[in-house]
Amino acid sequence: MPPERLAKIGEPFYSTKEKGTGLGLMVSYRIIKAHRAQMTFSSQLNQGTSVDILFPIIKK
Image (cartoon, rainbow, N blue to C red; front, side, top):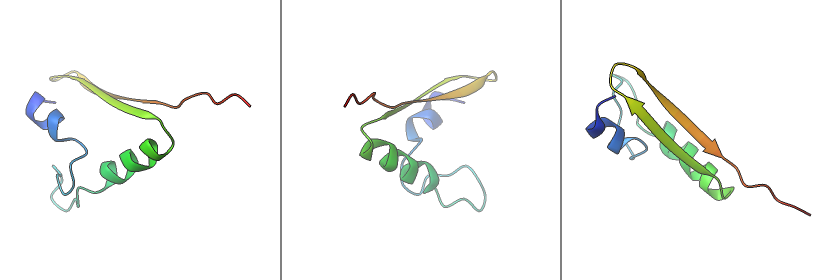
């Protein structure tokens, strides 16, 4: 994925799909953030893109 496209991931209404709304990752990001988790993306052009979601461990 090119760097300029990677930079826009999660922006409202940004989609590369013809009929996409651009809301899926934005909503997912907000849910993840509400749980104090982090979502990061890494990509190599023509190789693939990885998404890492890290949730905190809560000790009781």
